[in-house]
Image (cartoon, rainbow, N blue to C red; front, side, top):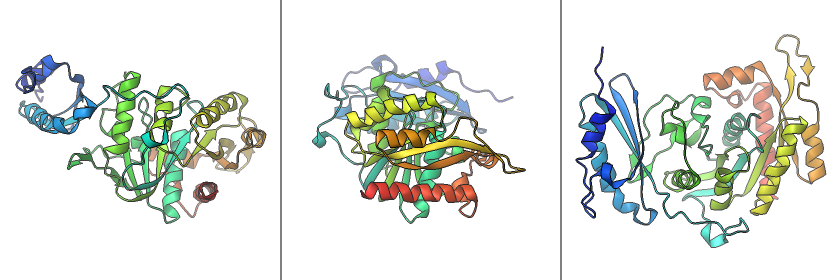
Length: 357
């Protein structure tokens, strides 16, 4: 049986890291906001989040390196990840909810950012975002995918992430390249079983770091898998980056559509154009007889889109293949020659046409 170090062993090592400006050690400083560990086969992979002053972010890089070295010095620790969460003093949005244009900026190298959003959870937003991003890449665009759902990141599972560690080069996080996409998620940085009990400012900071401290390279489109709902996390993203548009995902049922209207209102409030509405789980198709069953009703999203004056982009059925490929981490949009792959490809074309208008 392998003997792993205790949390006390790691904390003891962190007391050797001293902040030169205060003379306090790292534990006394109050900068540690999260400390967790998980087995990785060779030992423990320890992750630590440090809350820092955003105005001094660059000066904390040596501290991050020293912290990592201290953790790795503990017998039984095989890997260490240090995340700088610069949420203190995060700028507050004006009461109107719309940031002045000069305060919004695109991530370096990114031409367009679009949000895939839903008014509520459980409508297949993340699955849609992943497959839509892959389909956009199939049209010849350079595409990135940012999992902005901090509280429930599901993109790592959907893309088949192998749990390899995020690399940092010249102070920037390096996205994973998979399925033709550049992908980043908070799920790459925090153990999947760790609950994200973060307050608004910390969420704001994490999202900002994943937008601007990631080396995205040259992208035509960065797809954001938005946090569900219209709460602080979703509003933070919508205010922070100049979005070229938002794609709304809903099921046909009335309950989901009620929340869709709130989501559309939020984007209108911050001046983001709604590119259109996708009806997910539009119907169930039997894999044997191919008979269609409209479990959640029929046509509700298309009718709502017409009533609200926005484009209806298309329907996605609920199929066994969609569930199986999502669970396997091999998104169905990769199967370009299959009916579902064709549906997502056509959705990607519709989204690009909406962006052009």
